[in-house]
Image (tube, rainbow, N blue to C red; front, side, top):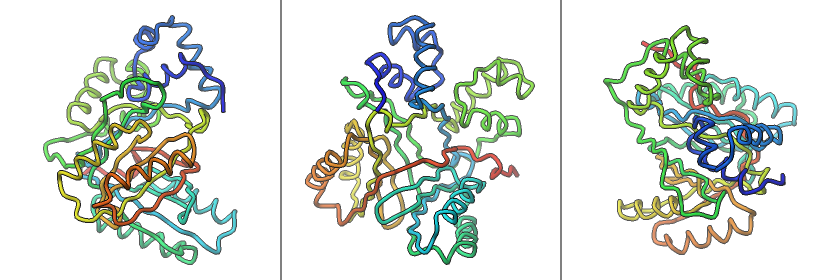
Length: 328
């Protein structure tokens, strides 16, 4: 675990849900000079704690659905597993690829126009790698709540969140310039308007206007810092809940519980065996089990079953897999 102080944590916390924050504003909020802020960010990046910044897109606005696939593998040598992971990394429809523990080996998030297109993608995977698939689970996204990493500082919980309602908006249209712009900021959210303009031959103000329109139409929900929680001594776990009779009032209570838990950074609702999944960043497995026990006590009337596993490594995070998008 790397040694960092409270100022470093404040920098990470400020950028967590606003990775495009201007350096002068960041310095003012953390109460340091601009030069010190720049130095500290460079140091945190060199240490591998900060790894970049990504834009959070809501592609359902323009007609793309998200699907989750859990894979359990067998009879697979290490080189073959590397080949499989590379295949998924390069797949134009994946926006998250990660190695995990427990009874599963790989977790994948895909985008597709509809279930028919996703079925074609899945069947292609089975044809190519079916001999290595021992088990799988498919979940269809309904909505996502992105929560701030409130565990970084001992403070009142930050209320800000990014909510993905995953509803298509027929009136929202984008062009090739928007696509190029979104591709540029997808995994480099801190690029400024001037530099973006040079890359796509637009003025600074034209770029700013386009980004503001994308935000207004909720195609862009926000900008999150990319960082390795393990560098600060935290581990990532995904908890999958098999829910019985998920009534609206209990669902609201469960989501509120997730929102106010400083270690939960995502809450996702699905169609499938596991109706709700929660992602934790937490100190250790013992604390995770303590919180799991508390959750089961509070919601024992609706939690039928559960599964969980550690997330070992993110091989790909890209909320905007450009080559998949074919505009009609």
